[in-house]
Amino acid sequence: MNMLTRRLLIAATASLVFASGAVAQDKSQERSILVASTTSTQDSGLFGHILPMFKAKTGIDVKVVAQGTGQALDTGRRGDADVVFVHAKSVEEKFVAEGFGVKRYPVMYNDFILIGPKSDPAGIKGSKDIVAALGAIKAKGADFISRGDKSGTHQAELNLWKVAGIDIAKDKGTWYKEIGQGMGAALNTASASDAYVLADRGTWLSFRNCGDLVIAVEGDKRLFNQYGVMLVNPDKHPSVKKDLGQQFIDWLVSSEGQKAIADYKINGEQLFYPNASDSGA
Amino acid sequence: MPHQSALQLVLSGDPALFAIVRLSLHVSLSAVVLAALIGIPLGAWIALTRFPGRQGVIVLLNALMGLPPVVVGLAVYLALSRSGPLGAFGLLFTPGAMIIAQTVLVTPIIAALTRQTVEDLWLEYHDELTAMNLGPIGRVVALIWDARFSLVTALLAGFGRAAAEVGAIIIVGGNIEGFTRTMTTAIALETSKGDLPLAVGLGLVLISIVIAVNALAWSVRRAGERLAG
Image 1: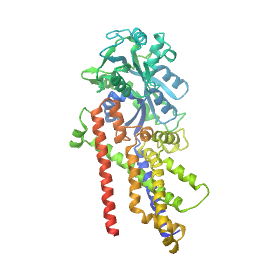
Image 2: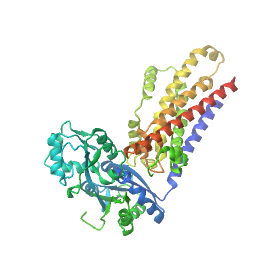
Image 3: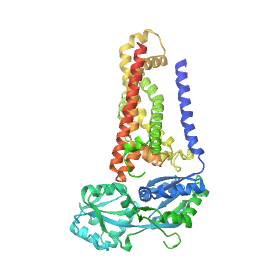
Image 4: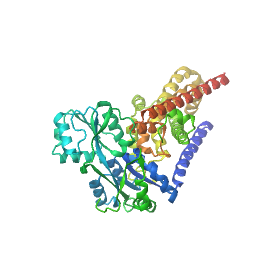
């Protein structure tokens, strides 16, 4: 081996050591947890509001990966997150039942709203009956954007079609478009194509590219959107930081955490309603 | 981030924005350095060696320049996940994971462009190099040295690829605020929040940075060529 090759090898080794040093540094920040959550909690700005308070109190850094509910649960299932904070009660309960989560805690709720163009082609604006509204959209073939990404909002939308007695998998026409993306992308698409779309209120209130979109249907109890939080089971994944993760959960459901959630407002409007004390939620 | 334009963020020296820019450069430049350490020797070696199936390897290498970032991201995600073969390192959702993914994307670009450059030089200087009686490793080193200024272009192509991609790093990095959020993932996020002016503004900042890096590399190359006569 000649001199230059050796030098190249040394340089290569050195840079690998350098790269892994950077990695080791990341790990040395012990007091941090990774939370897999949904786009709605992040895009609405809730985390930006409550996480600094939690950090000030405990010194724990919360890193949030914002995904759809389905993907967030999968991240937890693989052991890549310490805590999962999502909104689709039935799949959350399944997650715990399968042993991937330790226990599900209800945290808060907000509501879904049906967004649509000002021109209101389905003639449903101002209604409080989501089931009748979905029936009208289908009957008139008005454009509808579906998340199509197994997120909590997508699951809620599929449930509502079911309640309306419509088998959407079978009955969907060209008016029903599944985009397979997050809430913001779905709103952008609806805004660009004058379509109806089911959204969570938090994302809607903080969304900026509304165009001609307005709220078409709101206030129906069936549009209720419950959030739950779970520690990923350390028995399945020993890498889970169970003490720090549990501290975060305990804080969220404490009176202090619940007040922080209630205090988050956009333009004076409260986005999330804490209900950790409601054990049936 | 309250509603404000990217220009305001730049002018006010917003620390969050600078942290994002610094991380973008750290990730993409680290990936280019690692990819160069693998890709340049590999490309030069393929250029100078004759072995069965070489044509196939060259076609494959050229094709890998077009690796879809989202596929690389998914593969690296599955490998680094706690449930994957490299899970014990705990690298998923860290800048280290992003560097690995971009290194995978950039290495074929640098290797393929190096292979072409060195092979052209080899055809040109074949007789001289043979007369100098260098061993195979000596030839590789001599040709890489000869090609060093042209190889800057290969490195810039790799950097361009790394700095521009979002598909791989958003999967393996998770776009965590203050930790794995880069220029491109921030642009994707602001777009999804419907803040299109801020997204466009960040895009312009990113393009300016890429131009600045290229201008810097160009002047280094010119200065080097002048020194080398």
